[in-house]
Length: 163
Image (tube, rainbow, N blue to C red):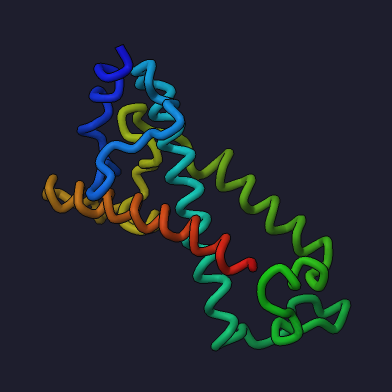
């Protein structure tokens, strides 16, 4: 029954106090590991994007890249407002470049490597240091749990920063 299926995921990464395994809408009640891992990979990707977005929202309050964002439009980085107001100021060509870069990362660079490890693209620490795998299993588990927790927090934080 559903209790048995829910217990199937109680030992997965991301099951942390105080809630333990938390699935209030019952998405995982059927015990389908493939679907669970698909959702976990989406959670990791969205958490990573939210962490970058949160940092990207805060850093320009204190520091801006010097120079031009768009030399042809005589637009500097310092002229771009923070937050959602930037949507109307950055030229369409800039947004298309960002979209193309993100698409390239998704389709070419970050290809799933192991179906048992959703979100692990074997790029090493911070997704950029390929020779830095964490060899200590407990340390690795702690780091992966921290990434999930930080991603969850960042998803809530960036939504809060919008308003």
